[in-house]
Length: 158
Image (cartoon, rainbow, N blue to C red; front, side, top):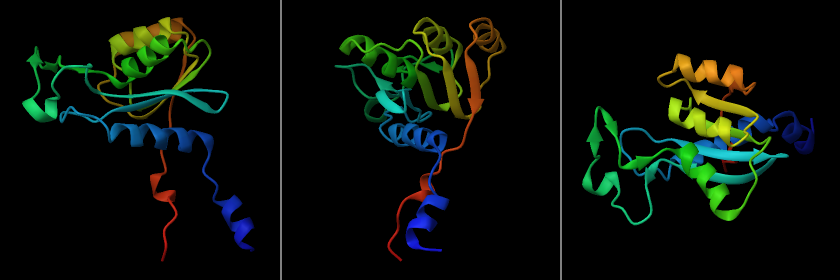
């Protein structure tokens, strides 16, 4: 097999590629409780990205600690919300787009995703699945699917 043939035989799928991009975004997270990353994709192009962390002009959890209310950090905004709000801020349409996220969206993010017109959600880790969120996604005909990233596909010099 030639080097070109070998490369194409191992080429990363689109799902693995965008799931990997969401994991890279999670590296920017500033909340130590859970690092979450998200990318919004349309026509195989990333149109926005987000990670969980503080809003603009607030301190970061990693610097001053989490602000806990009822077992949740209220200082951090979720990765999905950050990505969708980035689209709103810069006038980027999300209708019919796909969302790749490291962790299954919470109920609040699910509502935002539906309202933004996202067509498909691809997640890597099932974290605190919410039955009502699933019910809402079913009603809205939003496809949800677990996928795997493949960050180990990075080129290495041996």
